[in-house]
Length: 124
Image 1 (tube, rainbow, N blue to C red):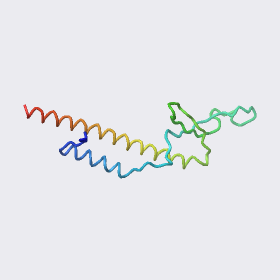
Image 2: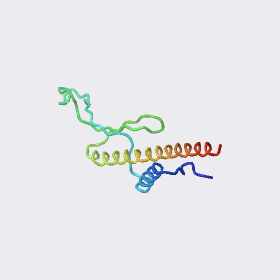
Image 3: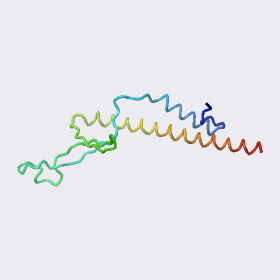
Image 4: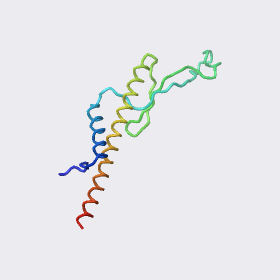
């Protein structure tokens, strides 16, 4: 079957070049994390704790992500924050690269379709 992304021309060549750069750059990494890591503050609820007299409360880190169509929020220990942040950032870069490959394929499909229309018009 003929590939739908076999457009010709400089724009198609640029798109394919970028696509293959991304594909070569990324394998499916097994340790990346989805979502976002954020710092927030919560009061613990103990009346004698310092946080009961403060506006903010205790600092806590939360990882928010989607899984199975549901939003999940997980508390992250302070000692893990640096590593989790790296994995979330790498996950975001990977997700962005995959989205760019998808968009490139769609653009190549559009170019191919336009070329097909031009060929048909010339035959008439």
